[in-house]
Length: 404
Image (cartoon, rainbow, N blue to C red; front, side, top):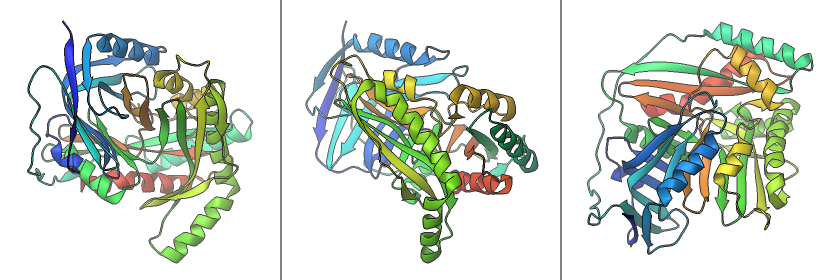
């Protein structure tokens, strides 16, 4: 028996986060546009070296059961899969098909629901969350120990074993009541409107880095690497942006990340566009060197979908290092934490294999009253431990602020 999926147009512009229930909300939103979902029609986990292919196979098995009536026919309508992949193949990645999805783009909004039930009635009253009080725990790896790890990795780089390694940290806290994901999402969206705000199975964040957008054969990837903190003084920050754009250390780190993405996409594309120099992306608390890599899929690559490209793109030099395998081994030997789904691909994929996925950065894993947040820094030859520590603290700031 086929399962019906209906997509209908909605008239008004909707505050997407205000529609979400407290229980397991799902979101991928930027500047008020995107997708939110709730309820679970089906879900699974995948792990191991074939996890992207296993995810595709499971998604296709689900699609065979659906009968879709789509009155809107734009990207993000019909059957939608939300995904949150782990950084390491040894940890679990999560796939969820929500029962209800509301989407919005360029002033147009739509509703998708699964099953024979009548069209769901959307809530009209915003739910206000009570603030929580957080108690931050002692870090498993002290700041001084983390700085020693940076020093050790710089020595590895100077010896010629590796060019770049991304080293992450985590911080954990316990709240006095359940943490409301919706409140965190609203705070992140208000403070960081140019980022992609996401929530999938308790992983919540605001990533500035788009790993992959695939839409009708066109591929886009926004690469970020090279960071400097902002001061809040416009004149001073303008000077800092100039110094970031000229920094040989940051340009080197950025070049590794851009090259890894361009090389991953090139075999599938008839043409690619890689700008010669990056631009400076201004966020509320930091600035990044950024490059938008674009490409057109070759006509001969009809079977290429988001899963295919994710398998080649992840992990990029922006979150792992270069060469990839050596950097990954050094992370495993030195980092001392399990990243889980931090720094993995997160977002959505549709029935045609198109989708939009970012890298899970500036994020935290929420479980009831517990939260664990993450930050990472790209270590290259010119890295100074104290500066890398300060950069990681700046990258913790969005989640710490959103929780408060």
